[in-house]
Length: 95
Image 1 (cartoon, rainbow, N blue to C red):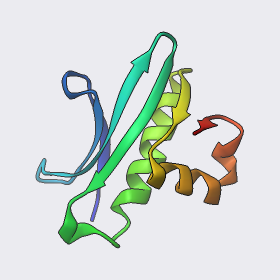
Image 2: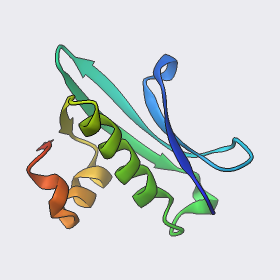
Image 3: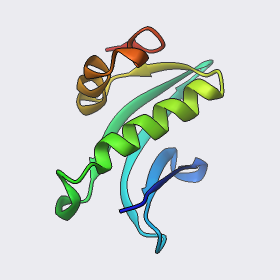
Image 4: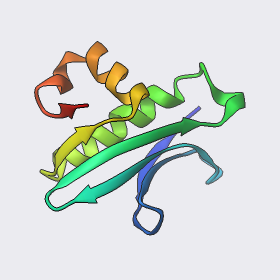
């Protein structure tokens, strides 16, 4: 499955979208002054265990870090994901 991660500013979230345009999962965020807080991730039940969450996590983190936005990760799934991917650990605040 090929997914693209895009920001949906109106909904304050990033979405993993498949080739047909269907949303496979999303990460909600809240902006606080100069920091973007990643608060909740969700993947469609039927797609769990197929790498959607990891694709979404990497895509979201790359997007916010490439934009130079200070990032706090409070979503339990994303905290756990960052802890397993040390290349992101020093670039975001956990908790």
